[in-house]
Amino acid sequence: MATRYSPETMDQVYENRLRWGHVQPCPECVGQVALLDCSRLGQRVWLESPSGAIVGPLLVVDCAASHHTDMLLERGFAVDLSYELAESLGVVDAPVGGFRVWSGFPLLQARQVRWQ
Image 1 (cartoon, rainbow, N blue to C red):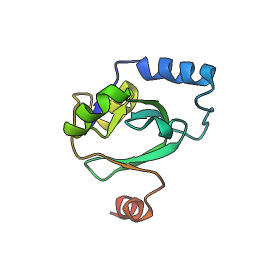
Image 2 (image 1 turned 180 degrees about the horizontal axis):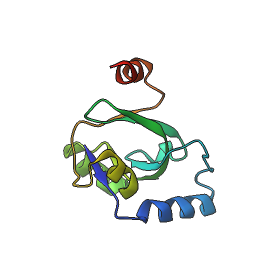
Image 3 (image 1 turned 90 degrees about the vertical axis):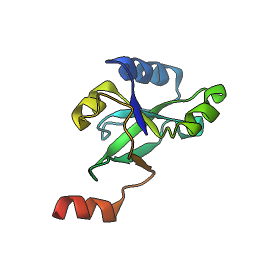
Image 4 (image 1 turned 135 degrees about the horizontal axis):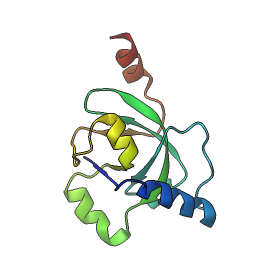
């Protein structure tokens, strides 16, 4: 399941994470996301939307507080999107199921999306 941040909130989080040295700039990234696992901060990920579209790379700029992790897992949480990313994917009315997070570019899925 994907949820989303309020408008401009992910940008503020990104700026704070840069200032604190938790992440590095990612000029090739097309947006930012938050995941459950704080050890993923600063990594690049790709999203597969319910339609099969692949979006990325995306920079992981935020994570869940440890005391929220179990509850989020029970709800099927996978990713928090920036409002702007949610808007571009047409999922502003989150939560939306069917999202997958990939650590690397999913070649097979990308070929299927491009060549259909």
